[in-house]
Length: 246
Ligand SMILES: Nc1nc2c(ncn2[C@@H]2O[C@H](COP(=O)(O)OP(=O)(O)O)[C@@H](O)[C@H]2O)c(=O)[nH]1
Ligand SMILES: [Mg+2]
Image 1 (cartoon, rainbow, N blue to C red):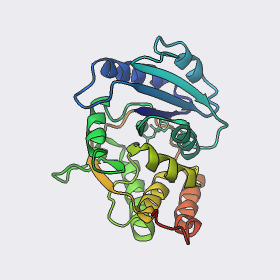
Image 2: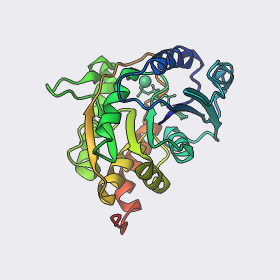
Image 3: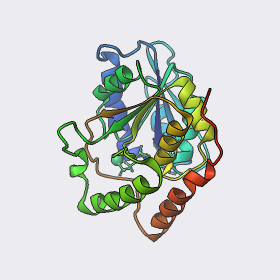
Image 4: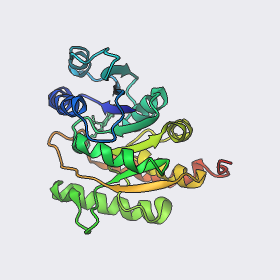
């Protein structure tokens, strides 16, 4: 299994996050495959993110849980995740936020869902209807609600939480879907869900724990709002005429 972690100027958060992840991977839950590689995708951070990763004891290790670093030009979270997912070679490929907003123990849920699905979408909405995003600041929840309204009408239909940074794929689905992904902004998740449905993959929605971690990289403002609106608008148009896989 490969775990892809996009990271941009995460020097303050990635150390403790990797401590938590590797502590878990040294004694993982039932069902987690023994060989795991963690791939951090740093798209041109100007802080110590890359050197922190390179300095870790797990770096370059190839037995058990190892750590790798990939550097790509800065082009947004979507571009970084895409590069990592296409470079990953595990049987299962997962991407997660490098602030460990979702605790690593939740990985077993994605892995078990992928036994009978091609795509497992972490969802912060719990079976009882409660929403883990309640820990977000109020303005983020308000923007999220507006975003979801637009996304659900235009693109993703009944998927209620498109943006959880915790999703898993079989390698075949990952390589097929991410090769087609064109959106580089934070809206790339919506494009992936659109692609997965249109290509006819089996999709599982997996309730996961998630907690807002301070120090978000997201800078809400008119620029981001325009980008998000434009990307949402063009997603279905980008993939007109795409065929289901056979
Ligand atoms: N590589 C890369 N990662 C990004 C970028 N923007 C956000 N991320 C990563 O995406 C993850 C989630 O970001 P975060 O700022 O915590 O978003 P929030 O939890 O939605 O507030 C973190 O791992 C970030 O480092 C980016 O432009 N490039
Ligand atoms: Mg976060």
